[in-house]
Length: 430
Image (tube, rainbow, N blue to C red; front, side, top):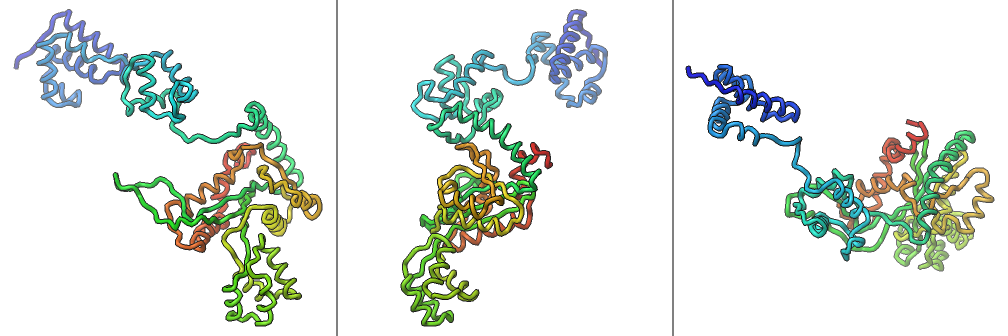
């Protein structure tokens, strides 16, 4: 068996390379240097390969290259730490961060959206350095940037005042409200409105590459309008559909076949084609036309006959929702809401000051702050489960899908509580 031995200078060079490999955590350099030192000590190539968990051929290649190229080849196995050295200096990286934050228009571009190709162009223009758009996204993430959807803020309010109002809400108003609710044993409800479109909604999904998913749509511009409220403590969910009512000639004819007396159908003919904004107004007009209260059976028949899809969000429909909440909840209610016009309409203010006095307190969120209302997240989850990538041939199919999701909220409060996790953690409810 032939053994090899190296000169003292060569051994010192190998030992130095071994130390550098350990300091740099360079496993490949470590194995090569250690393997060559073992060759000098007289170990066989097969045993060295077993100790280093490589093949005999690999050790033989190391030795052959080292014999030809010497320590100069070994130095080529170095790298200074892990990963590719950054092409941009620390100062350039910070400058890039600030420019991306300021937006494309501030850098002379005509569009308002950054993409990787545009930032590649910016770096080339400023510093003459070329990046691959595919690699650049990793660099941007390291800088603390992410690709995200923007949100609107109003240009009507001063930005400083806007931010101040949000801080006051988060740091003063909301904590005080939680304490007040606890002291008065009141429930805190977050309320809002949402519209679900008959033509459905789109979302991201997995599909074969190059084959964009297609969803049928009627294209009809109708929407299912819902009021909703969630209980901050229990996760209880309340909802009310905003529906309009109208008796048509077809509906009146159908009522005869469903058992409504011909005389009463004739009395109701004067209401034909009149649209009533709420269920209450509709039933009141029916009783006035008949000059008698409706029986339960008659009420059911007439409600089914007069239901229309296109309800509206207004003070009348909102008052119906408030009355529903007061009927279902016996404790005092603190209602957290936005400042949409019908929330503060005169009729609503009068209702709160008279019929709901002592039972209902309304608290307004800061303007243009939907992110402060957790029910917004619930609406997003509802659309994901009930309308995304679904085809609704008729309005009733849309309603059935949404109501099925709502039933899940009624049966499993955790689906509601999860959208209030941050607020509940701050209030020490979790």
